[in-house]
Length: 81
Length: 196
Image 1 (cartoon, each protein chain N blue to C red):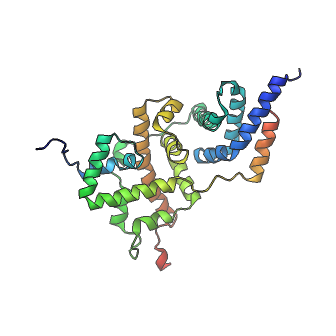
Image 2: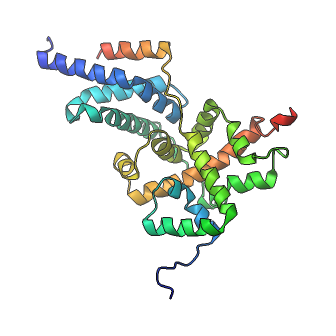
């Protein structure tokens, strides 16, 4: 019985979908195909961890600072509106 | 002509909203443009003030102001008649930073090569890498991964089909990976710190 089983996607296809998988932007079917591939492929699990780290690198952990000089200039601009 | 009470109330209300979000707007502007991010924030504040009546709820104020800033930036690019460079798909489609690191092995004594590579990048390095990318990729990456916009919100903001936004995000991520590698090579980040 093959109902419910999917074709195992190749590494290239899995890697292409990894960022979207990390972003939870895949359809349930595509996410399931990636997960099935990951359950068999150790190298792509490494790629997945790396994609997660890369995503974290982009996202600033600290809040953006507003240098006093810039704050002064922008607040003065607001006052003059 | 003196301002009416309503004008004054509206102005005060806008100023309060804008003041609260100045750090966020400035942070966004710094990641979109290398030159004069303050000018970009001012442009956005002026546009926001002029269209303040269209804001339905103060709760939506942050996203509203950020959308105005992004559109001001895109208008600026168009005004300057700068080309929005696309990187040919075939140039980046096959690039994998993960594989490149494994093959080049810049830190041979490291047990955690990939993480060590990423840890070599400071906040300003990441900003510089983003600023090196063509705007067509930088804007979606900043909106998604730094500002946290959903794909549909991005499509609305950028007036693009969802499929186009997804394609730009995909190519942008590839371009970002490749630029991280190039930047690291150019700035001495590929030196094994354990042997320095």
